Length: 208
Image (cartoon, rainbow, N blue to C red; front, side, top):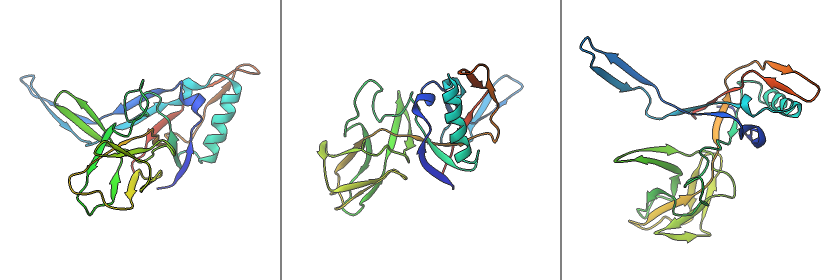
């Protein structure tokens, strides 16, 4: 899928709104009881970047970015300021934030993931766009400075030597969301010389 490894301007995305979307089918019986079925195994995120546009320079930046991506044609990176770390928003990332696998003495490649847990239930999110320079790894709680690499376009960590059987592999990182514009049109309004707005800049997460 066509994708540009470039991030939407942070100063504009910081004021955006949006979050995860689920697809649930609900059938209501004559008795009022319901049958519910989740159509998607994973959530998909939607955003509206228009809320971050505050001045004419922001309009110009969005227009340049939109044109360079050819509208909906190319995906790009997006920083979700509400959820961009492996740990708590108020804490620094740590190599023990997220479990990403257990060694078996053979496997050398592991996918970065983030676990969302509430009560006894949890959901595992695949992280494909870690931010370069932010990934830290640990084996059995001991930070590993060398001996591994990370592909920042896929989120796959590769060890030079396979972790031994039973070794817990954990990671800490910052990450972006792969998205694309969900429109081929920008409706720009320039109210004054230095003020302007765009009615809507819809973005949708892309699954690769």
